[in-house]
Length: 184
View 1: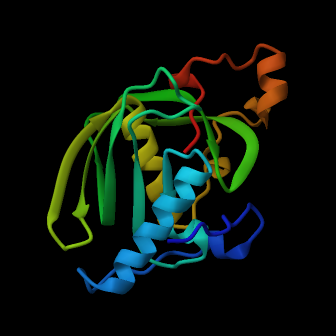
View 2: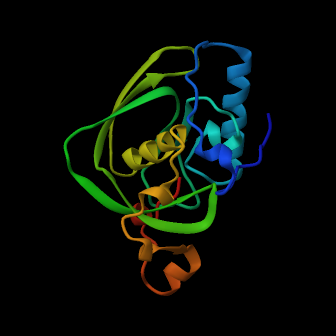
């Protein structure tokens, strides 16, 4: 329906904790979700959280079949996840480059749980319960952080591994492999 502007780092609304969705299967909710998908696709993103559009609800979307920014990444099913809960499955974490549509053109090294279980609801209120690992798990954790006012820059493992994507690539600090070049 509409491509909305993505809030950028520095906008205080990105730091707010989002409210739970209490009513499902409503035209207003469907419109928000459709706008989120339109915006994510227009930005070539693989995920988006409602707070990134100034909408203070606990809604994230993610998924792609093919994405030009991640041509070698495995597809992630398009998912609407409302009121999510994440549980780490084990203690193993992995480092990976992340970026964000709210922090355009920049990347940073972030540690995330390798395997997670996420639960929540879809737009109709049906329960979701999925186990994910690797890039899929990273995207879900990144997007759900937005619901608690957390931007990936707050999770950098080393501030020296944060910079503009072009410079990180040119200097050889970051390669172009999709799983180490992650941006939600």
